[in-house]
Image (tube, rainbow, N blue to C red; front, side, top):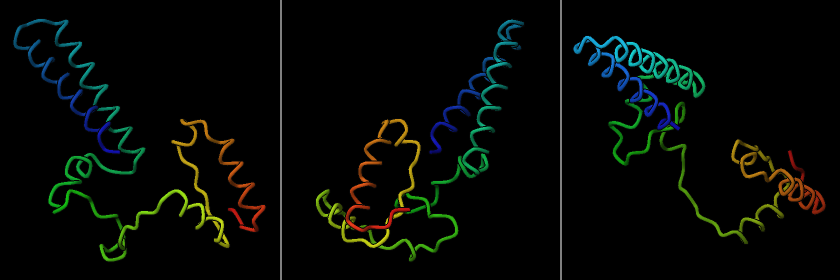
Length: 134
């Protein structure tokens, strides 16, 4: 989630370098276009950081200092994360059908994959088996 912010910030730095080079070469066009690239990259980085509710510093330094490279979930102690258990597709279907309640939280990927109709079919199947779907 942080990589687009980092790329935008690197774009801003390239604009800053271009503007500096234009200043050193006394080239007004290079200075102005570099300043435009730097300001738009910085503005876009700030907008994206606000969108993911993080600061530039936490985006740049977020993964550093962690042994396995994974950042800790904010607000949760490391022990609360628990072990990861891998399940097969058939096992997951069995878990869904034997559950009493299921909460489905659709995200951006569902819209991109255009799977709303498939999700509606899954919800109808679960409800026909007596599962409460939220």
